[in-house]
Amino acid sequence: MNWLPCFLKNWKKIAVPELVEDPDLQKSIHDYAYPKYYKIASDGNPNKHLRHDAFTQVKDSFIETIEEEKREELKTLINRYFEDAEKKAVRNCILDERKRLDGRGLEDIRPIWSEVDYFTGCPRFSYFHPR
Image (tube, rainbow, N blue to C red; front, side, top):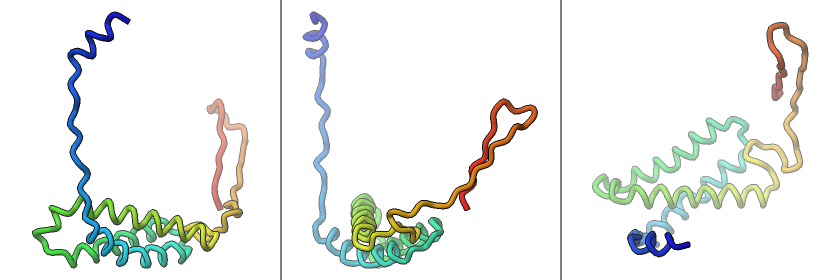
């Protein structure tokens, strides 16, 4: 315990930058993106790559409306506000409609089959494949 005061004596506090917020930008992003994100989430598209592309397209179409000079300045806020809008829309869609993004219900389980066999040259082997 004698080493603790020596350690704390040389300790320097790190300055944490203040979190910048823009309530007007946040509201405009939420009003623009939330209904579109909710619609994408409720469509039940089983292809996650197409869903990701649809989410990205919504964000890109909003960014196109912002002046080029401000885009880089607001990039961090835009990313954070879009992430928040997507998270809220997807969560609310799952809770409201009781189905996952891929269209399965909350109680549904993906069909899966397994095959276990002895293969020469391999000490252990099993294969699982979703249908």
